[in-house]
Image (cartoon, rainbow, N blue to C red):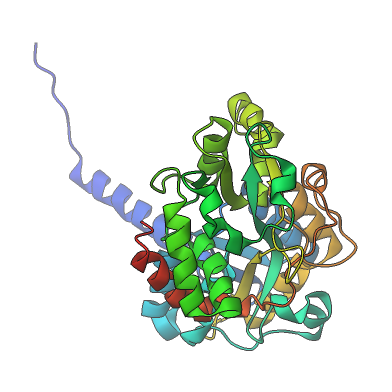
Length: 354
């Protein structure tokens, strides 16, 4: 039995032409130069951010087009496209990366009076601003570490030989570690921080591996006694959204906020800046201003477990339960992280912090 297939070449070519036109129309609309849109290049990967942008659109009529990706890829694309880039607003989850991109001349002065009034000066620059805060703190096993032994503990104490083979922390290529170490370089100098890094490596219970949650899991499993991780990861685990196993593990460890006797606990930010070639600068500033409203801040903290960057907004209940009375490092400007990250990475690699 023969099956005869009648191929209508003209019909196929017509369909291809229609499809090509549809795709062209789609991408043109995505990056059009209309005045009622804003193009956001974001290295933050939260579904709740998209919901927030939808709220902004509902209020203003300004459409938010989002391009998501990793920092290096987004920065490379914006840089290579130059004046032809359609990027208006760049958003990421680390002050160091904002600072480095700013130093490369990729942002423009876009801090309106509303932004300056909402955000403390140590959490912004002239060209970018924080939109949420996070603390990078120590977690410990109450079964193996007496809370009294942590009294007055600092980040600097992580290099103390008493913690030999008892600490887990992420790799040196992790940007949150780079910003933490950059803050130490800023406060203590490069030479002292280089010595500190060697001490931390000597105190590691294992070679660095895994994400922040993996460090907390290691303490819960008895592989280490201390871990370093961002606060929102701990709250995320406690929420149960990462599974009952991680929730149970998080309950086995407790948070500790270092450096309460001096400058305070290391703080980092999520933030954004307006690209120097932004075709929709005014809309980008409007979006930044919206992200700093009470409505937007409440949405952020209740979905990402970060700390609000403006006053008058309380964190999520799981974050509040960790304690809100701790002293935050308000001395060290987060803008210094980008300037010191190269030094930070250098001292970590020299210490064989892999």
